[in-house]
Length: 483
Ligand code: AMP
Ligand code: ZN
Image (cartoon, rainbow, N blue to C red; front, side, top):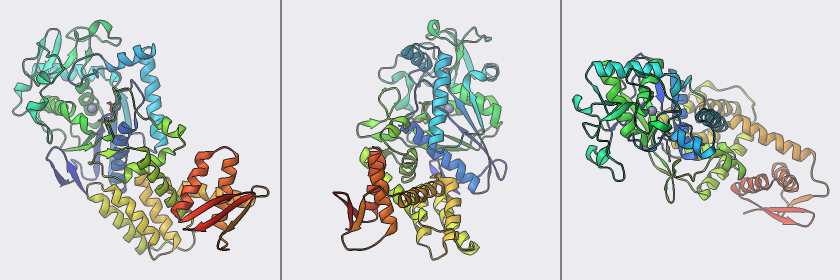
């Protein structure tokens, strides 16, 4: 598999420290608010990556942290702890906020069919690990104490690693507009490993340490949690592109200085979901959640489909119109899968060929939009339905669109509508054509309207429209025609 590596700035053959086994780490959510659908784009693409590695035969061990302490409002050690900010906003304790939003995050993930990583560890559960790493960094001369805090000394590195297109000067913390310089820092890229002073009076969660009562910096938690669960050699580290600097840069600095050897060769960064007005951001306070999509009648899996249609390294613009287009395409796909009959024997040669076509698309830097296109190739392929269904099921272990399950729901709905047509409701086509499936869908739409389920009614109308069929409502029933 060839995967773009932001550490080397090129597509590379993906290799692991232990053949056949992947140690994978993902930066988890900061649980002071709901995840927005932008955050979830990152988790969706990381989920597909994990599932594709498994599809390719790797045994994957995936670890994720939950940031429940230490992430300040600026990524550069400045401002208020985001958790404390969330607790104040809702007049609750930090622990209550963390529990509530951690549960909400995994509930959203479940709706999007995102698998929970093998290990999920909250930052507050690993304080001993951070203290051990920070002590070692001090002993080795990579850290210093100033003004009560412990800082990483970036001047002790041969090279302070900066990803991709990030210019070290541009991103230097001390010169960023609106960010007050921390005068304790000896070098502009130094960062806090352990706080005892900054905004300390208010801090709800604090622990004893050799440097006084305090709390960990944000970056040290990912190093601590990864080393605890993934071991000394990490194969693949993931996060949204905004994590690259300073968070991942600082993770590399402290992990390699602690270990005394190279740590993680492969870095996977997901580009942002943007709106017409810019990046979707939790701290801006206005953002779209999975619950909001549901309130508006969208199936969260249609959002998953929307994300699969574009490449993870390209910014994706969210608009309701773009999502509506994805809904139509997703429903059309489901209707086509629903039309397949599980008849015949699986043809193993055709199965391998079609599955191989999908693998070829995905081996090219996780090209999910090409992967989706392969689904249409499967539907059109010259083989029997049993083979098509088997390939679709296999591909969907990666794309996670629940195609087989949802197609069964479509069939059940059609059968129900055909068995109990709305009383006195007649359906005819303008041309006199008879089509039981179209008729059943039109009746299902009438039933949905009667039950005031307008989202479902619209979905069915769109599904038919996608098949080139227009419905004309008439007194006592409906007419349809091909357009
Ligand atoms: P946070 O909960 O703020 O720590 O962010 C969780 C994850 O979402 C991180 O990997 C971020 O890089 C990622 N992220 C933040 N904003 C966006 C966005 N607009 N689009 C995609 N990913 C994002
Ligand atoms: Zn992290």
